[in-house]
Amino acid sequence: MINDLYQREPKAGYPVSEKTEFFFLYDHNNIYIGIHCFDDPKGITAKELARDVSLGEDDRVQIIRYYINVIVINTDCCIIVL
Image (cartoon, rainbow, N blue to C red; front, side):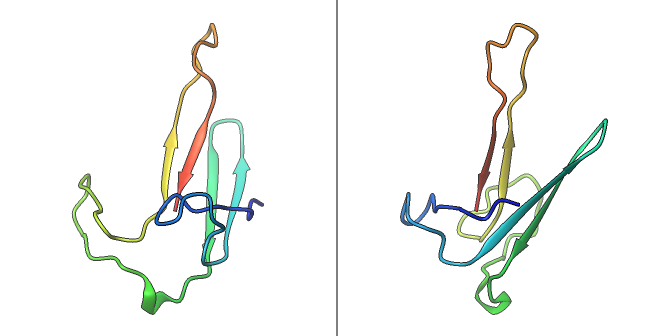
């Protein structure tokens, strides 16, 4: 479990304002990510319904993945943005 998180916006580097926990499981073919957000649902901003568009001011969790090539020029990295 990962729960020592920091903001990217609006106050970069500050502790998150709401408790959030990330859980990771894996098997031979997949990685599974679970996220437990403790926010009050009434305070969550979620207006955008379309796929593959900017989420603007919506609250969100963003996971970006990078790949490793065979000669390890790029590093393995996962960035999670709340």
